[in-house]
Image: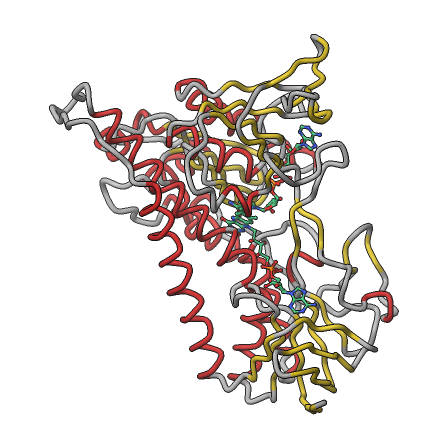
Length: 462
Ligand code: FAD
Ligand code: NAD
């Protein structure tokens, strides 16, 4: 049995863990990263990246099919065909390139990558089952980055036709029909993609509207598009289990209903990975199911840090990465705290949704007097040339000093606006700052400029 002494041990090589390890290595801290599976975690292997690849392929195929009958600008194409095997291979190729890239970055930072399942024996010691036998690591600092896993419904356990996002991203063929339980991020991103690939999709959502974490105004264009794609949506409906014949049993206001589907994708949230690695041997304070952390990602145990999905919402890759980078800086002696004005969120539905900072309702709920301005893409030249006029940019600011509090957008391609929304909020922009910034023409970003002008009562193009 080998023994390694190190300054920093990172348990888990997802976006949180690998970024923490790279930065720690860059700071010349002796660092060991323990990962039992492929580098990059959920995000790179079975999450963000493969889902966006599938969404892109589905959109390209759906666009081509849409052009068969000819379109407004005169393009018509023959009958398109999709070799789904090639789609999967292409997606896998992207994942492999990124796996290799992460390994190279870690190596360049002189991080020692230990492959195998890690179990904490106490707050400083981890036993790793590697291919060549167990290794024991003793570390001054431990960063827990074990991430999350799909949450199962007790009445609808995973197996057979009931699948999680992980299996949905690796199906060998497009199913003829798919029932999706949960109209959250995963259910809608993947449900819309499979509908575009040709599956008959039915979405079952317990809440009274789709994407309940966003406000109704923001999600309306997505609901419209889903209807146009022929996706059936059952709201206020709960998945209750399978019938004897294997149909999905759903209880809704109208009573019990059965939905026949070749596959049932359960996407009702993700659970923090807190079992199977010795958490019970650590004296960590928990916050509900998650490891409790303070603004420095410190846990209740000295020199034990936690980052990413295992620490709670929002379970987003860029939050995990920002936390990982910060913890490594702290271990190198820098004074840092996680005081971000906003963690932008993007939902890669059709159309896409971006939200940074407070929604108008959330801003009002703080008791401050606010102003909101909305600029529709129908009045944006670039959106017209892209045939994507459904959607808008909406800005909310304090009424007294015009400090921008929140920015949301829905529309084709708006995910790329997340950067400017985040920057504006983080830099404490006022409406006048956005209004006084030249936004290149013709771009979708001009709608941010115009929404800010409109909030000031000075709109030009509406
Ligand atoms: P994870 O990525 O879950 O990584 C944890 C790692 O730890 C894993 O590699 C695991 O193998 C390893 N590990 C755990 N325990 C041990 C152990 N005992 N020993 C050794 N190794 C261990 N987020 C976005 O921001 N944008 C998106 O577009 C997006 N799309 C998504 C799409 C899907 C389908 C899914 C499922 C998620 C998506 N997410 C997205 C969420 C994102 O994937 C997570 O927020 C992110 O991966 C969290 O990073 P993490 O480092 O905390 O954990
Ligand atoms: P989610 O929390 O986004 O949505 C789950 C949905 O399921 C909710 O709308 C909930 O009301 C519904 N639900 C719960 N129980 C139900 C039941 N019994 N019957 C019917 N509906 C039910 O969860 P998710 O879609 O599984 O995604 C998990 C996490 O992964 C997200 O919270 C997010 O942090 C992350 N993610 C992010 C992105 C992105 O950033 N673009 C993409 C995918 C996943």
